[in-house]
Image (cartoon, rainbow, N blue to C red; front, side):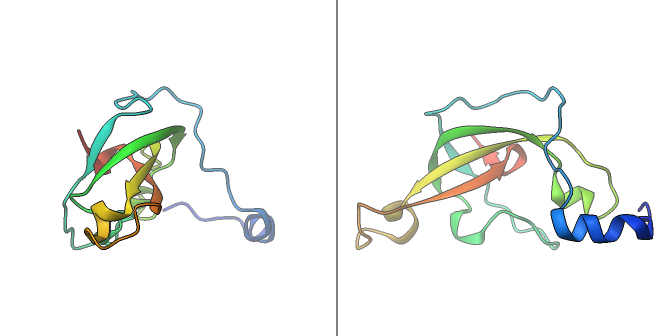
Length: 115
């Protein structure tokens, strides 16, 4: 993993580092597409919340291409990947007793989505 020069630490902590990437990555899902979050259980940390794994949602926005934190944090490179905002209805997540007026919006990297 590359070392960050000491003079860059304060600005990075204060303002962060850009994660958006200006590269071409395929768009697998259009707004309105019904998808399923993958049902995976890796041994390592992932940004796929357990409570949405295997659940159905609807793509509401294509957010663009970003660094995939799961690989970048382990020194495996930025691995540019498309990020989508997905709406999950409350009843899909918590059953028939959940309020139908509620939903959860989660941003998911392409690799976390099955069609």
